[in-house]
Length: 424
Ligand SMILES: Nc1ncnc2c1ncn2[C@@H]1O[C@H](COP(=O)(O)OP(=O)(O)O)[C@@H](O)[C@H]1O
Ligand SMILES: [Mg+2]
Image (tube, rainbow, N blue to C red; front, side, top):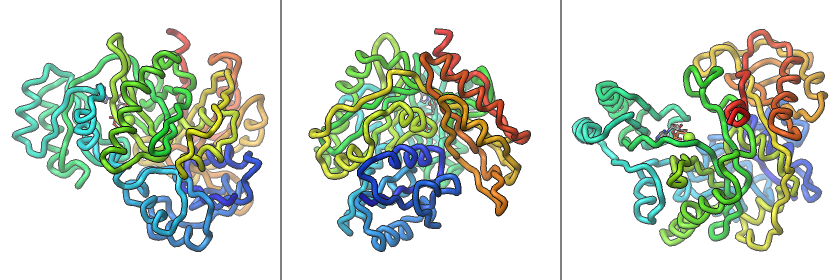
């Protein structure tokens, strides 16, 4: 098979690494891919959000399957346009991608289909926002309706600050993405993510994962795209996973189909779990980054036929997936200053030595190579150090042993990945 993989981050590096092991893979095209991903196939310089460019490339290359990593092109209708060319894609249509692209849509959808989630109201004016905030006890949770690259949620204890945040967002802080806001009740409990492969009708849950969103140790500092993660998530045991499937995922797939937008691709459910059961925090319509990295480490089955089955509606015929029982962990190394503005181009040495340590795979999230072969940092999140272990502590230790072999003075990472699960 010939596949085209869209994206260039650590998530896509992990997907490429896994897909490259498939005995049925003949050729991989990476759009745009990265210097580190070039070992898996041919990189073509088309940006991951350039829908017209991606469609043109697919029309030219005629891949048997397009696998799409990031969400922007999905929401912009890449899969719909590929379908017009009769090219199969692993990913949702624009209509189904609304589950991520509009939090207001998802809230209404949950209400229509009786899916447990925080009580909320969607507002479009300061007056409505302030009036609803006054009815809530706090902490206050405000969310931009549209895609905001993980920066569109404000949580605050102070009513005045919540009102100010609502006014800022409605005033255009995130452009059209915050023309509407979802204001919702604060949920407490333990947060975890479940990833589910879908073909429009059937669903196959993958294993759970938990991530670390804050930039610094002990969950200090600003929110980021994710500084590390581990799998399994102790809170998502088999029983809880079955409950999430029954109460959240199955009604979602049924509802989307009923509403004429069957969901194909990976449904990533952000969950808050307490004694009353799981509640949906949000949906994403693609793999998490860095969660994909640990899922790919643990998956033993061939990924390619499963993604193909999602795309062509035959997921029910796919044999059960096999997973490595051992936990996996991933530590994200970022350029100092992330998630703020960072300098690109600092030198990273010792990667070969680090990658050679027991059990370690290094996925590149944002690097490039200069003419001499020297690796350089090329963004905020730069490296994903992943490892397996007989237990989570061992997996994490392997990760940090590799981190310590990397010579990159301009980089940093959290030193407490997995600690939450280890101290429970
Ligand atoms: N209702 C809520 N109660 C408590 N925490 C929440 C709630 N909604 C979101 N959060 C926290 O905010 C984070 C970001 O919210 P989320 O809806 O996942 O938006 P996004 O990922 O698009 O920024 C979540 O991972 C969770 O930690
Ligand atoms: Mg989220």
